[in-house]
Image (cartoon, rainbow, N blue to C red; front, side, top):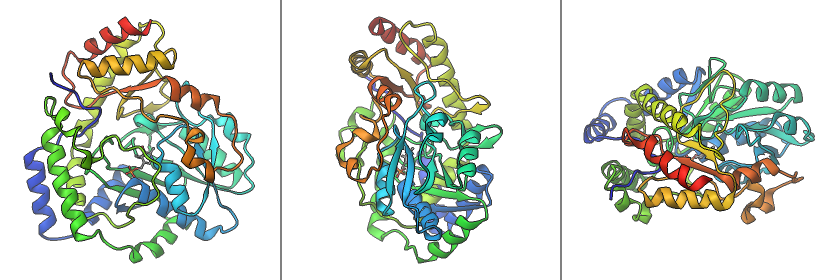
Length: 399
Ligand SMILES: *Cc1c(COP(=O)(O)O)cnc(C)c1O
């Protein structure tokens, strides 16, 4: 049976070979990548680095350098576990803020109730490529006199109020990990306008080393394997190759913080040149799913923030309760569709993260999402009858 991977960027042999050629000859592709991403993010500056986690850690360190008296980062209570891992890696602590289960984004009312006394920065999430209420979050951070980080790890190319996700607040980040909008297996970038944070990053970045040679070779080999086996029919095979780390979701503080290597940079550049087309396919697949799923009782589709153009890294839906969510994920996977539960708990319920939390607030919204959310693939390998196949299974099991 063919299996539709949970997420993926189609990469051809031609993409691989042209990227390898670009990496081997001439100017550093990281510089060109930096210019292209800064243009997409409508910021003046961009620094490609080894991962989204590395980007977030470096941003936090730059912010902390100017405000040593503040050591708390406000993080959505439901987001990727790499976020608190980066906060911990920067030597800072996490204050969770509840999310609104209707939008999956930070709940502005809950944010305004927090004590900002020790807060250094507030972070968005833009999960699955749906922009949060970024203008509102930016305004709250400004009024409170704290930094805002626009985490667009999953939202490269999304916009709200005509501005790109990643460009709000004082600095933003993108990720090129597996399952993001574009993938070079690992990789990421910081974006920022000129200002206090950019000036500090300019001081820090020259001290950052490049990737180790063997690490680059290993990543390139993984990328080639990933590209080849992402096709439906072959994914079942790579999903059993543990070295690729597909589905990695751990709270892990040890990760490399380096510049992005030449081959990864060249690959990111190749994929970014196809960003519009890749995201357009995702939007079409998402709108097919929306049409099919809208009428199914018991299923709730998270609302898109007003004025937002999402990119749908995946398609999120909420089941009536945890047992039915788990059943739907199982049935969809049995039918060859890479549905997943996304993050298995709210940040505050992850045992390893508890030690870096301060002033834990009740977060019923985040817990509700952790219990009921499932996500459906949207990538270009989804066949045309995909929406109908998904909705048939969901209609049968959700009621
Ligand atoms: C993936 C992700 C990150 C971290 O990016 P990596 O490249 O995997 O380190 C940070 N924030 C969010 C919301 C993410 O989804």
